[in-house]
Image (cartoon, rainbow, N blue to C red; front, side, top):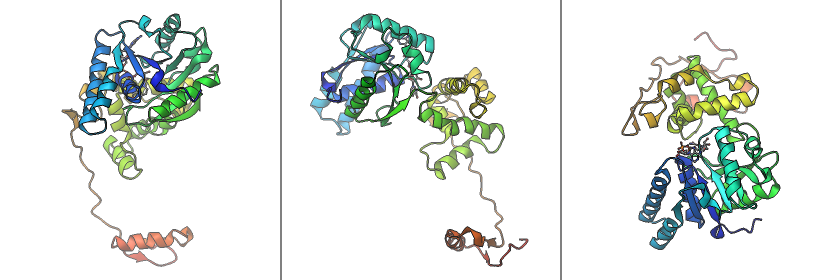
Length: 342
Ligand code: NAI
């Protein structure tokens, strides 16, 4: 199964939004023929034009030569209906995050594609098993969870649903590698790996905000500058859009039977109701002008400095490092065995 060459395959992509476009780009660039379908009239054509523009940009940057860019553009095509997916060996779904809509789509796809065609879902929070269960052949359904923006985020979760046959994950992982991505195999569980771990990042950030521990922009700054994240949780939510993030938070919470650690925040629901979604609505946690966030205040450092710093002797072996740090910052050390009042 790992020797299946992507260049010989026809991919169908349903849903030509942010994710569908990204997946179409990496697939066509790697050599697959890609058909894009979307229920919104004109959306698939817009997506094809967008991805072709991306190839042109890659050519301008010298990452593709003219022949490669032209060939990649030529491998993209619009499908006017699902019926055009009959020659596909793989269909990837990236439509609205709604279980019943996805189940309906997979049922419709089974009426069109051959029995050996692999059906993959890019769902970020729904059960792959539940999507597959709607199918006549649930064994050929797997999760293929890319991240946004797809061409830059090089990891993809390959998810085995309860009834997924082993060849599905093996093939998806091989195709991911051929598209320059790193597959990570995961079992079907709420949030899989990344969005499960992400509860500590996003849900907990709302908890910090709700408890007035710090301002949202201070939490972001700490996560960037101290914890080394590329962006903080509120910057990430503004990028993704709360209309996407909040339902994911709710879905994972309910799938874990109302586990208190994952409880959604009323602050998020209020923002969604108000339409304050993030970059896409011009205002999220940050205000945006020409898609650039308006700068937030930087909390000044306290003007007062401690007279002396006492470093516990029980914190060896890092004590010497702390002593050196205090000295290098120009601080005075309190060398007594117990700390003084100041
Ligand atoms: P999007 O809203 O940008 O695009 C969805 C597209 O699907 C739209 O163009 C819409 O017209 C189309 N669509 C809706 N229902 C359809 C149907 N029944 N048949 C055909 N087309 C239909 O959404 P986005 O962000 O691309 O997300 C798509 C999927 O990918 C969702 O399941 C989402 O959870 C998942 N995902 C999203 C990520 C993100 O950061 N945006 C990251 C990883 C996964």
